[in-house]
Image (cartoon, rainbow, N blue to C red):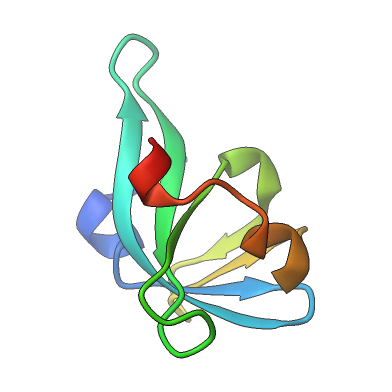
Length: 86
């Protein structure tokens, strides 16, 4: 399925055990034209941290309700690479 990047950037990201934050940036693979990572701004949960989440972690993308659900827990996401390490 194809989505506009601006539409995805308005989504809230949900882990299996609670809300993580919002999509801040999208990193693309320019050779394959695919999303490589979503940079998630963790807002109040982990203030000032932006973590990278691979599309492999996506459970569902619900653009109608502006929500991306992940197969991962908050602890797993907390141990993900941060945007500053990319």
